[in-house]
Length: 143
Image 1 (cartoon, one colour):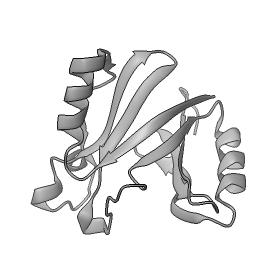
Image 2 (image 1 turned 90 degrees about the horizontal axis):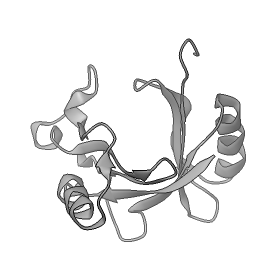
Image 3 (image 1 turned 135 degrees about the vertical axis):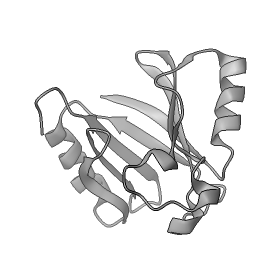
């Protein structure tokens, strides 16, 4: 398992991550992914170029992930909810177990489910108010 920070912004993720790279170095895993890239999604024009996902990679075990909020979906960024502990788990089952245990008594934002980027993903706050993300990237021929 890998644990890394996930930072959330209100429309400034691309600017922030470009700045972080200029200071810290590293490489973007696969560039910037925008909300307009979501297949079949109805995204307001003013949110299409907001960042859905970005990884700034320093080494195989060190990275910073980030995204922008989506106001049309009710997301609001406040100091305190703008970062998550993100778990890159070793198996789909491990992700499910961590999700079920960590989210118990908390507030689920996105349940642990298969996503269009070929992964299982969840986001939630635990019963202590700590924000978490869990991601498992499916391997070839895995559902």
